[in-house]
Length: 143
Image 1 (cartoon, rainbow, N blue to C red):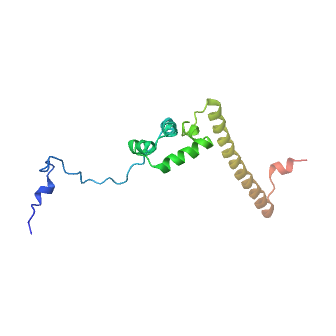
Image 2 (cartoon, rainbow, N blue to C red):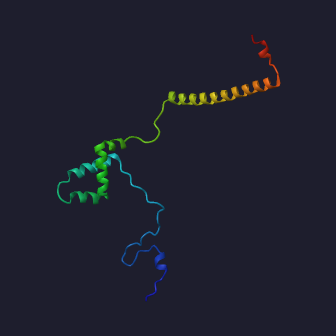
Image 3 (cartoon, rainbow, N blue to C red):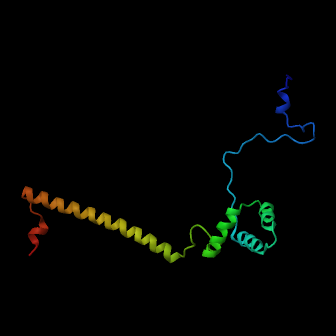
């Protein structure tokens, strides 16, 4: 058995054959590849143009794609979903009227809740007054 020097693995110097040792760092989670709608449509056009045996396989190897991705993209294209992928994602830009309307509706809901609470307090106060036999000035002046 030969003994190996542990320091040979710790250095980042090129190996005897001139190649650098692989990077030992492992990423936490691999990043998912995302393809734009334009790229998908371009690859589908190229794939549809492949007529000779082996051309499609060469295209997939060159682009680093799987045949299942190509099948999914064809299904999406047939449904019209690829064109929809080109649309902007996220919040839609809003104009001032929509923002103000939302703000007023929120304030209206808050005020309605406060009103309901105030009416409940007034009703309870009326019940307590009736139980204790206390009359209020407004009740005496009412016709």
